[in-house]
Length: 372
Image 1 (cartoon, rainbow, N blue to C red):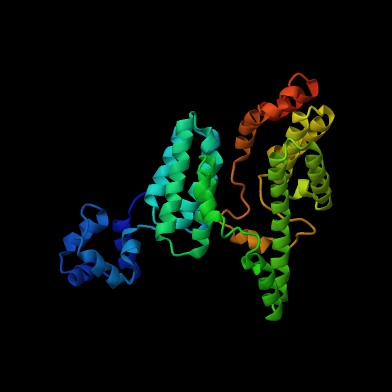
Image 2: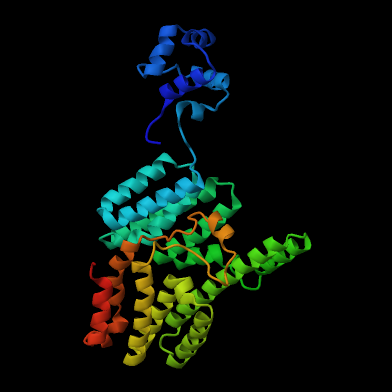
């Protein structure tokens, strides 16, 4: 909401209860003329009258004056989608101003603050200078701190902890990220078995459908996690070509088996890009160009297909309920136009220096970075 609507709300609530201005004035101990001025927006009730009016109409003070402290999940999704488009289409400073205005207005809406932090994480690199980028990351980390200090929702706080750690890593601050994540992310903790135990509990309670859906979601997320870990492993072992080739061989087999390119083209694209970077680093031009061709195919799905949405397929056919509960539903964290904007920077990766003079490489870059 862009403004308070006290005058309209008093008029609406009075009429809904079939009251005259005189009757409302008698209750409040004011004149009919005062009530008339309230409803016309000429004057406002005395501050001490607001709780009395709210109690009379059986609404909260926030509802009476038209103040909305919280946004629904759907409202948050719409705001994120609009702001993501703004980062792609508007001057960066103008998009930032809109984000900050929204954060200021709904500073107690912790689910919104969390998603605004995600929005910054996905777009901070658009800032012109290193100092501006660092300031944005720190601003988003500050929102996470506010969530952790005041929010009572354990799930939102857990997400804020992970987001804050990711932001700190982007800032080069590894120590606090390790401190925040090391204990909870320990693979040996019993918490790692929580998902399997929950599915078994659903089954034991007789809710077979819920157990089936949960295990399918878990398989889906495990597939994405495996691919994401492989992408990181390729960067960690980039000097060890035999090791990287084995990672690529194994994950490629899994990706083909699960049709990852169609299921989640963004994750498949990241894997192919990192594979190409490793091959190019070791001057294996044929393999690098083949991986970039597969990368191009994935990106084409993102750029020229329908709007990017999280989805399942014939095997993962029970994800809809889970997707509907996500903070952004199935919406992609970045707008499609942002993807093309970021590709030019991606192709400037030093690993591709050995390919820059090759016509095949130039054609791929041209096709993916030129506006259409």
